[in-house]
Image (cartoon, rainbow, N blue to C red; front, side, top):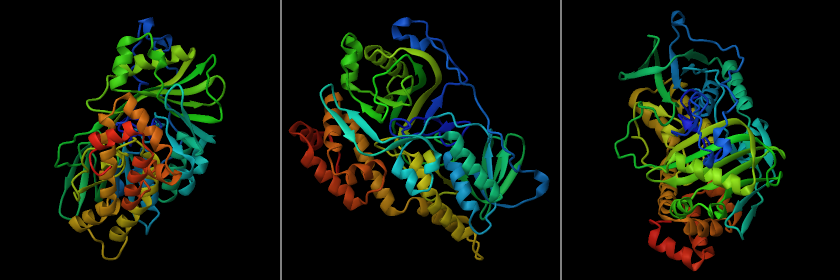
Length: 479
């Protein structure tokens, strides 16, 4: 759904994904390309003993590099070249000659995580050519006897195509790049600067942090009481699998695979996980076992054990693990202090959907509006800087109505935290029976506050009596 890794927005440290993985959807998902620990106990399943074959890759691209002797004064410095950072760099650099520098320890590294999105989301923002695989339908297995078939196409993002497209546009717009890690951010009244691990200091009117959840550059004034989404995913060659090739499995909540695993079955009843699956052909599939949200975070070892039991029960024999990834996504919690001297985009700015983990498509869609707000200040003859600039750009990303909507989604997360497997099944059974306008909009963060209120009433009307009892007794208002 949304898997990613530590700094989902920065190629070197994070990544993001979306609902189950892709989930759009970190820290977010972590790819285990550098530290592979062989699990020698075969009871967990042979696929856990296989070493992923993929190695870190780099794009071949001639980037215009920052050089201290150039003495360029930048308008904007963006920390991180993940999807969020590059999308904003592409957008803001196209407006009124704004000078942008992107700083990342490895700007040409390929992003380590798989990203999944609803096809209509990328169509709306002109990125449909960045999908390398689409499925005309998705499905949700509520239990062994009930399956929801959803007439909404789903796609996998081509990480290389998307990154190449963003880099090409950045280069055309004059963006410079610096290969370094940012150590410190310093502020004066009308100017800020970064200090890098190579000793270089770079100055700009605005610093934007797109380095992901692990960042220490963005301030909070409230406890960060996140829920956590955790998942283990593999891109695997298998002898065979039971999935329809024209359907992407968004969620599989079945638990019959735990019939002979009393401990795992009992723990899954309390803190359920589901399978997310992208079948590419009869022998190639992306599989991911996901805990939608928990607090504290569910054990990663537990997630892998449940996945091994599920694949064994489904008769899926893994021949090769091409890639694997660990996803850990903080969800919900407070927004950063608004405004503050460092702007943010991506996971560090609070854009992860608190109820689902989706973020990539939303970040791609919101970057132009943030770029407009920046351009109004730095691209005008007035050159608005300092606190008025910070107020303008933070409100551009988080206007009051969007903050209110996020509170609603956070209520949804708090409800999910209180539901066991049966309650979770009942909730999604009712949720996917809603008018598509409601569930499409909810998953894509497109609904107004009035529409979210309408969704709540409709959900209550579609729910079973048991689910209504859950909503009344466990659901924090206003859901």
